[in-house]
Image (cartoon, rainbow, N blue to C red):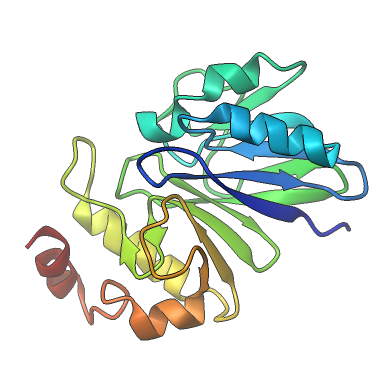
Length: 205
């Protein structure tokens, strides 16, 4: 099975990252969270000779999905998202969904908390975490639809992934654009919380 490649792209004035994920054998790709500058994703795909077949959303906040229509205007692109957050996707995603892409696949983890339908996309030992986990931080839990307890348990899942798992976040909020679970366990105060109550105090305090 092919190993998917991930290209991280600056995508808005709000420090959003979007991602081009593609199979180097078939050159079929997925656009993840096109944000406010979908033209950046489109140009990157064109430069690399990648055909975008899928549009994936980690969650439904406008700063991540604003560019959806521009990507969907391309030929034969299917929208894949959690319908709790993004209405009427072509491919409804939930916990355990597997998204074929070229000669490989993307696994879906449902990680509610920042939003009810938040997803993490996993390929090999790399995860695209949206606004669930940032480098040195985590997503907000005080927004409409957020749930701080759900966020805590979603982060517990992520912190138990192999320590060499690479983290590709939804925003450029940390000291580096990407990290690893090992680095987060050492440096992210939200992952170091010993229990739910301490997490709630830190996240909502």
